[in-house]
Length: 145
Image (cartoon, rainbow, N blue to C red; front, side, top):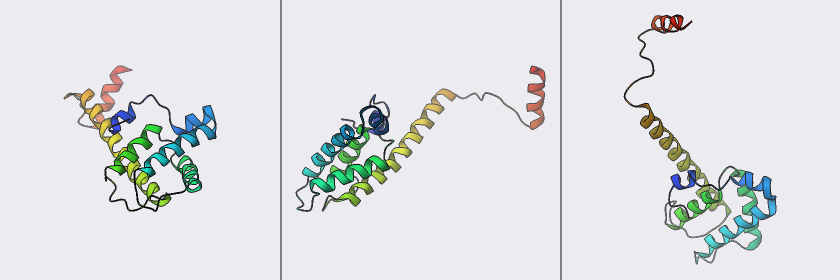
């Protein structure tokens, strides 16, 4: 189970869309229903989803968040269990979709930060070119021709 975004980024598991393409809709839908059911069972709110609602939510998630990996859903729902997205008084479709919206926003920020850090670590202190004007650029490349 992934503990953070970097573990998800480095996961060998493909996206939901790739899984769906290779296996078809039903196996990936079943996996997502199992994950959703397990997550909902963690709460004793008396307002959890029934099987039909869970299946419909899985379909909505597959349509809206097809680019995520199964590990993304695991991390998102673990974040929710830990209260990252607020207190939980019920578990229903709109709430779960709001978690996924927040998760994807956080995930994109984490990916951006990771990319920036990797860029900074490979960039070093030296610039590739040190030009003071467009004329310097022109002169540099004119010499190369």
